[in-house]
Every structure is written in structure tokens, then in C-alpha cells.
Image (cartoon, rainbow, N blue to C red; front, top):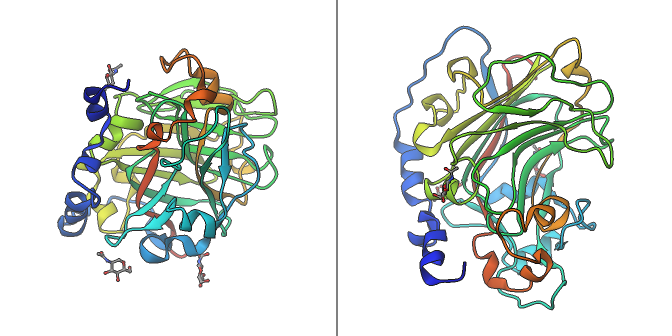
Length: 337
Ligand SMILES: *[C@@H]1O[C@H](CO)[C@@H](O)[C@H](O)[C@H]1NC(C)=O
Ligand SMILES: *[C@@H]1O[C@H](CO)[C@@H](O)[C@H](O)[C@H]1NC(C)=O
Ligand SMILES: *[C@@H]1O[C@H](CO)[C@@H](O)[C@H](O)[C@H]1NC(C)=O
């Protein structure tokens, strides 16, 4: 775990390439010729663009204790920025991370960041381009959205996983009466049908991705990729594109989900779940917690050692516990705004 070889293996290519890890990716981003294969259907127009120097202008830093029992202290905006845990690089990459310099006493909480959009959404096409996500033992990152009245206004988890996992999990949580009984066409594997959630019964309906590249170290070594999700009254669908497979229409900012093929995760409305009635007023959230209900609970089984809590003390364990974000863009069907 701590040998130099292991450490080098753990290095994302991005990190090896120096601070502007996204350089190559950025170039592709800007020069790739858009190939817009528009089929029938809806045209989407850009509503909100979270990227570049103004990234943090429209997010609130959450400073309550972690609701998932993680061993973190979430910093306010000024503290996070002063500590270098939230900033926008000169190449416009947004970085959000966990403190990786402070030695802590066993069991102490480590500084981290959790942010949520000021704006609330009631549907749309959300396209999130990440160069890297936090990973490593004890680390539990998530990119998700949630309404104020949980679980009745729903929760959509787009990126979530813990410890050394290589496959992302996409999950919905809802109030009563939402079961995914009907099979839907998708690339991922449905591992739980019960979206209905409550405190103490919180697995949700979940899809696990395949391919060992949608979460953690392997995601980062390929320069990340795009998670796009389309939330309508009819369905919640999520697509995953490794960096080399991002469709041209996404680069061109003229996204056309009709041309993207089978979604990775597909939660269609059905008799046992009216998708349209379970999700409202969602804020997007990005956070990184440590240990807690999931990462702590799975720590030993995931081969991370005996004590998650003790693992948190060493700052060197959090060198790769960082988000590197290109952009999060929200689109709405043309004419709907
Ligand atoms: C972001 O903040 C700016 C400046 O306060 C405001 O004009 C804009 O409407 C906000 N956008 C969103 C999506 O909240
Ligand atoms: C960063 O974004 C700003 C605003 O969108 C833009 O003016 C600037 O050229 C960008 N810088 C780089 C290095 O891409
Ligand atoms: C996933 O990738 C990691 C790193 O390359 C590798 O160690 C692991 O064996 C892979 N797991 C599977 C199930 O392919």
C-alpha cells in the first residue's frame, strides 16, 4: 500500500503530467471537430454553465456535520479557498479536495468540501465533465442531486463509490411507491429495485457500471470523462463516456441524447413508479467524505486494512482525494425556458 511502486501505480496520469494535468485533454476539448449527428427529437439549449473562473459563484458551501457520519469537517467557502481545498486553476480546471497536508490525531476529522448549487432544478439534461475524481481507501466521493425534503423530493446519485472500487454506482432514492419492476434497456446492471428509501432503509434502486473505468484510479488515468443525465417526467437516464469517447455534440454544446445509444443507467416511469412525481427542486451536490456509513463500513472488506478511522490521520493518504472538474452544464429542451 505504501511502497513507492504502489504509490506510482496510484498516480493518475494527470498528476504525473504535472499540475495542468488537463492540458492534453483541454486541447482535445477545444480543437476536436464537432460531429453533430442530429436525429429526430428534442433540441437542447444551454441554461447554466458551471465552469472556469466563476465556477464557485453559484454554489453554497455546506458546513453542517456530514449526514452520512463521515470523518470530515466541511469548510465554508473562505476557509476552503484559503486552505487550497477549492479553487479554479489558471487552465480553468476547478479543483475541490480533501486536506492532504495536516497530520491528525487518531479519530480526528479531516477538512473537506461539500458544495451545492444555489439554483434548484426540476428536470433537464446535465452534462458533467470530470478530469479526475477523489479516490483511495476511506474516500467516498459523490456527485448527486437532492430536493430539500428527503426522501420525498428524491435523490439522484450520478457518481458514487468508495475505497478501491473501479465501477461507479448510480442510485435513486425516493419517498413511498417507487419500484423498478420493469426491465429497461441499459448497459449497467440493476442491483436493487427499491427506490423507496428511509433512514435505516437506504439502499435505493441502483445500477452498477461495468468496465472497471467509471470510478476512482482507472477513471483518472484515462483523463476522466463525461457523466450526462437526462431527467424528464418519463425517465432518468445516465450516460457515461470515457474521455476518448465523448460525443462531438457534447463538445459542440449541442447535445443530442437520441444519438448516444443505450444509457448506462435507465430508470423509466412505470406502473410501480411515476418518475414525474418523485423528484423536485433538486440542487446539484459535489462532496468528498471519509469513512462514514459506506466507506467505513466497507473498509475492511475492500482490503483497506483494519481501521478506517485511524487511516484518516495520515495526510499522505489523501493526495488523490481531489476532484478536477472541466465543466458542469445544464441544458433544457429548446423553447421550455
Ligand atoms: C450565478 O450568479 C450570477 C451572479 O450572482 C447570477 O447573475 C446568475 O444568475 C447565477 N446563475 C445561476 C445558475 O444561479
Ligand atoms: C477560462 O475561462 C474564461 C471565461 O470563460 C475565458 O475567458 C478564458 O479564456 C479561459 N482560459 C483558458 C486558459 O481557457
Ligand atoms: C480493475 O482495475 C484495477 C487496476 O487496473 C485492477 O487491479 C483490478 O484487478 C481490475 N478489476 C477488475 C475486476 O477487472
